[in-house]
Image (tube, rainbow, N blue to C red):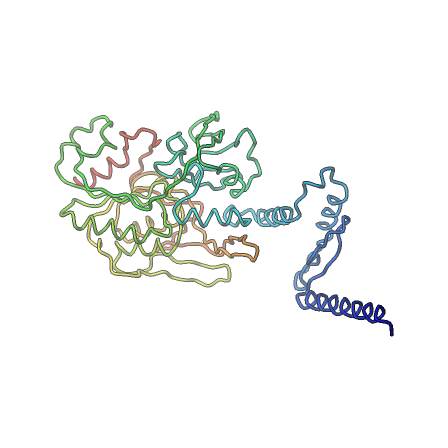
Length: 420
């Protein structure tokens, strides 16, 4: 046989083996391969056999777009898939069950780690609208007048109706030094206002603490009739926890050591205002500082199982008088902590009713770097109350717009309670 024919036969045989091998692998994975109208390969077009659902409409629309959309060159099939998954997740109507494409997933993890670039505001969904859960203390959003509970109606003149939280975060974040314009509706106003904010590197210190006499506390110095309180000689300790993140437990332990080393105080003001939450184990760890024994929170899962999270360590502030400050920006793990201290009668709660985020999200990382955060359960406080959509109602209700740095009426009331 001529060499040229032998070579052709070998090539044909090799191609046959290659195609057969690919087909076997796809079959083993129960994948299907088809071609779009422009000859691009589509993998896994069929639904898994265990799911009884008709995907013909999805693929019908997909193929119509590929065939007829006028700017086909701008179409990104991967973004289309992410958009479809986002829509599927959003159809559940649960603002906390979310899909995060790779970039948003990375940003989410970076934020819990302690720094990112943007304006410094924790966002959520409320009544189908983008809402500020809490501005992060000392960062551009707070300095510009953004408050907990604000609705963000537009970003750079683009209406946010129908946006996801991940989409809003992606549009609002950006390089340091650039400006984003927000149309914001304060929950006490009837007309929105335009606020331009210069983006910065957002630092998220977990803990801020001090020990002072009332006369040294500038945050209450502008209040009317503050003279009698300022004249009191007793000292109070103060710890503000901004979030339950990667470094919170370590930062918290150091702050408590500083308080204990500073000598006698009348009590501790534990400030959880504008704390959007974070890790559940952080809430259990910090609540254990004040509670000797018992369950901090219970989790009832979607499969009917119940998990109790008990005190995990010997606390160092088991007898110190405590006042906890909360507001409408206190959410999730912050509400668990405040609720546990209330139920065990370890603290007086002062401020505003908290956000009401009492559900459990289980994050599941996906192979492409994206993730889906699925609501898998609800949290219940030691006495059996649910936080979800109710929040923590304070023992002493005091409202505050949080705009005047010298007129913190909530803080003043906490000081009065400890020094009475």
